[in-house]
Structures are given as C-alpha cells and as structure tokens.
Length: 109
Image (cartoon, rainbow, N blue to C red; front, side, top):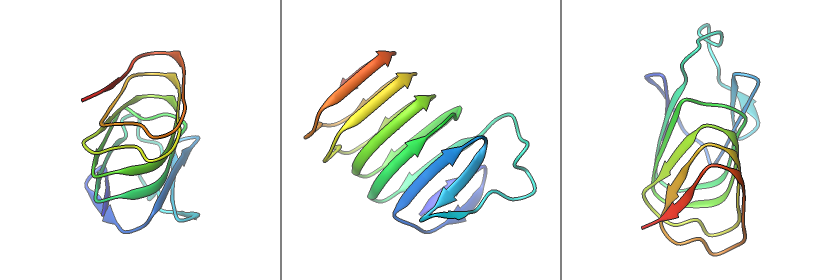
C-alpha cells in the first residue's frame, strides 16, 4: 500500500520524477500534482524506490533498491540491494548492496 498525500494505491515499484508519482510505471499523481509538499508512506515491501524529490517518505517494510536525489527517507526494514543518495538523509535497517552517498547521511539501525 502506498499513500501519497492521503490517497492510497497498490504497487511494487515507486518512482517520483518532476513532482509526478509513478507506481509500477503508471502515473498516479492527481489534480494536486502542483502541490509543494509531497508526503509518501509505503506499508509493505517495495522492490524499487526511485525519488527525484519529496518532503517525507516513510517505508514500513523492506526495499529492494533505493535511489534518492532529494529528500529524507525512513525505512523501518532492510534494503536488499543498493542505496544511492544525492541530497537528504536515509535511515534504514541493514543494507545488502553498495551505498553511494553525495550529500546527507545514511544510517542503519
């Protein structure tokens, strides 16, 4: 389950590009796509998480691969692949793959 600014969707892969949200390759951004604040909450595991920019992203579960250009991400579970972070902080469990961090912190519990 993926909740974006209060609206709930289902999917395995989430991407966010230029303030537009895609789940499994289909755009799900509604009439509020011009919103300046985007909060995303994912309940369950997700294979691919690719974020261009967001204010707050919480994953309650595990991730396969995490790519973040701008924004803070909190993952309650583990990352079973690589983590790439340009700007912002990522908090997660164990990371099985490689970690690439440009500006921000990646911490694990």
